[in-house]
Length: 227
View 1: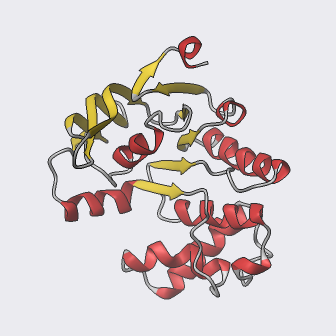
View 2: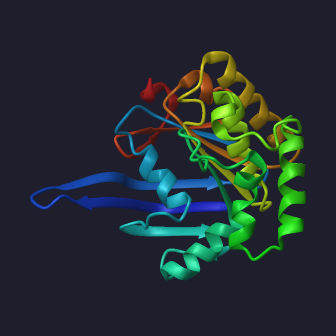
């Protein structure tokens, strides 16, 4: 059974006097344990694809099945519950809380799940140590490099033990060597059995994944047509 499956998914945005088709009949299956890059130029539909896969947006038509459950018609509260349990997000801009230590940033999703403070702190510290940040637990974002901030963001995404890690341009704000460090983290997570879906416009970043899905004008296309 696929972990994530899109069947004939479309997404149309009503801009008032014009309708914009961001996705046009997309089919996609992602299996447990895969490392998949969804790659395409600006305007290809990548962000829309991420929003739908991450339950942040809804298809206009078609179906989305996540962990065997059809989610297209679920209400907002149920979508939020599934999203918080199943998906860990990593964004280009880190989205860390300012003036907040690394360990408290990572522990934040557990607070929303009702986990007690002692367990939150222990699990957050373990996630940071796993990513080589055991000596940065009490550092605030301004005291960390860009690469370290992104690794904190990855630890925060992993602390709830989600079924899939969904990363949107995670190296976009990083220097080349820092970006490579973050990509090595994703490779290690995949090697340990984690499902990783990486959204990127950069073919060099996409090459880190074991499989690439190319988007162009809202459609999945063969690699040679996307070039």
